[in-house]
Length: 451
Image: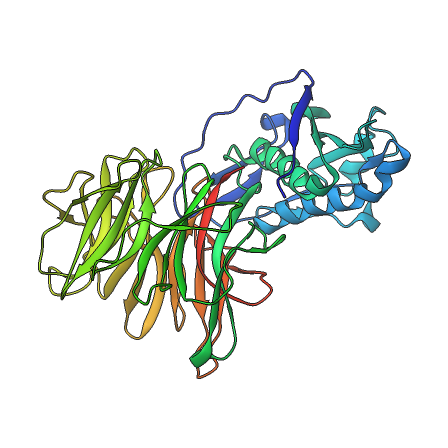
């Protein structure tokens, strides 16, 4: 069910900030009042999470009490999950927030070393909607950061509303674009390894609100969101052969994008404008990359090589495509113009490279690497330089980017006959590796845009 979220009110007070240039190492250092606005400054180094406090939001109407704890808890969970912040437990709080508009006793928050403070209130209106307003405070400067805001939601959208609050707090304290109010489509896996049932599912970025989109009657693989999050591409074996399907989110019925006609189509992705799909097509023993205009259903061939070429991914501006190919004798990464033509190899390290995905920022390409019996998720510059491996395990594969290009999600499979797959996320620094909760085994994630 889609929640209604409406920004209603802002208070004066702008946070001046410039976009931060990011790379692999990060140092989160709180900047105290005497040094300027409170901000996590992200540079190379070792992280020291910023201590902050989120007191329970104030209930301003009788019907709001049921939502206050959920909202403040989701906000804290989102911030804690980044690895950039350290929440000060509530039992250490000296002050209690009893009124949203009351002056903040900054001395009490300084005493417990809270450098940032998030306060909020929840109410319900005459239409039964939930209203949440919040402020972010620089405790040592004794001033508000950015704009106070208010959001309105239907009761079933309260969790999403809390993600929006957390997005605002995160952006003001880091200078980064937000990513909490987003969803992930993935393959849910149940049953033993030799009889595994795979269903396509969709969830909030943190694993909540799982909904199943297919029934498991046929194998489905590699779902991919459209740029606006309204459609999903995936590969299905419904007809006995792999074929690319497209599904409108919220619908039950999908349609085959590329008819079989004795060929196999797979590994689809949307172009940045959502008008074109790029995919792999196998005819006989040859696999090449094709593109199709969705409106006209007109396919065109982009590569013509005897090699196996697959896993295409557009650059954010739509001008180039990165893909994997064994044309050099081993599985490597190449970049070519979006219209096809001469390709340039960009991977030259030891091992084999696959499943490349262009960062939404345009500066990095994530990939899967296999070397010396281990699998890795890694990132490199678009010219192949500055390669960095973020993970290592028996089997890590299939990276997908958060909407802000800061976090990567992927699937990891455990070793053995009963090996199960699970979703993990990791910061582009290689820090903060953690499992994403799902009801069952999970693989093939695709991170959608901000809602």
